[in-house]
Length: 340
Image (cartoon, rainbow, N blue to C red; front, top):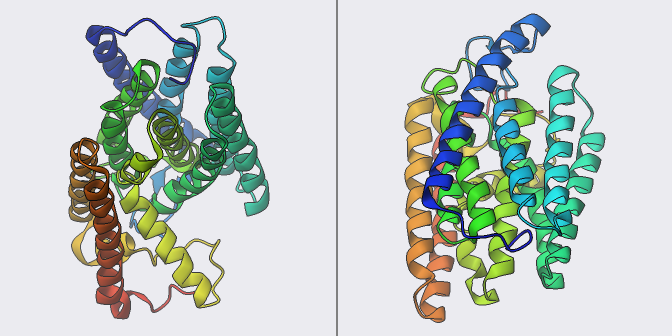
């Protein structure tokens, strides 16, 4: 459990939190559109973007608000709530630097520095909950990686929010009450945002939203590691694997080519694929993959260890193979004009 041991949460309370998060997120998304137009926070089409019309950014602010309220509520369940407030502080830092970057673009290093501090908040929260040192270290690394992975992968309509929704739904089924509350709030908040972002985007998440999604998914992942034996950890990595595989393998490929990997580009597998098949079809393809990964995780957690680990390895190799196939299939059509 992430915070002081709470009383069991009634299904009605969890359902209410899910619905309230969807409403808060939808209201935040609607407000962000007006705010973006007032302040000229508009993403213009370009060779390093995957959209073709000017679109407001910053719609993820409603998701942030919903998750922070849930964290504050969960932290209030017991007297020793420092760990809950630390997680909320980390999310606030990630969201704040993203909001700043949405309004006034920043260099990479101050953003990474703030992400590192936020990751340290999550790691320290795990330490206060008595997690093993290895879990504390993984919490720090997973937050740093997933914040940036979700930012990298927020490039087409619906993808980042739908992936976070599926991850949250999967983790809600395996975590304790306080973390389950946060997972369902994240899922509800993503559901409230998606009508504004797909199939035709009225607003983008912005860095405030994409970074926040990665941070909360990392917190749920760390909670899973803290609550389960080490043998089950590879299975817990399956829900965010599509995002990790595309972001990580593309990053390695760009580094190997000597490119400026930190700059914007359209060389991710989902970007190459969407130029040929459209945003909605690609988003649906990634969603089906992640849905299957979540289903495998939930089933394999009850299987013998060797079989479960073999299945996790198979899904990992299949994800890498899918990335390679998409990458090679569309590379010739999409490389011109997109290098740095």
